[in-house]
Image (cartoon, rainbow, N blue to C red; front, side, top):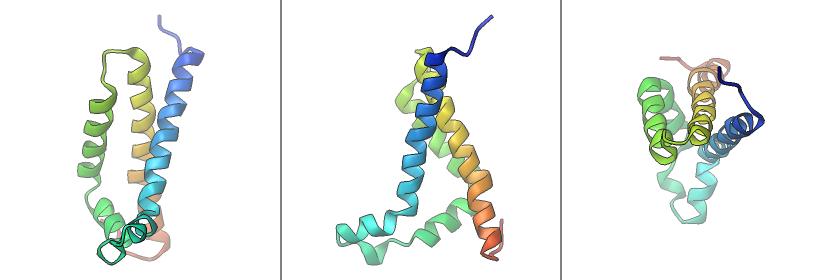
Length: 108
């Protein structure tokens, strides 16, 4: 019988925290691009529309990156990656589609 220990729950929430920072970076990508003089080439709305239209591809890409970096050998790193998976799923399948629904755009 395995238990969800404090170490495992800390890793899970740390994974959620890391991917929250990454997703907030997506929402601030225009400001970051302006700092490097690339502001006219980056459009946050187009990125979010692509993510909304290609949800499964986005989830698979983030998970390949997530588990590729953290691996599956160590239980703590696997739980860390599972926290990231939970955050990615919530952002891709809940937050972004709801955002487009509220703004009155077509959801694919």
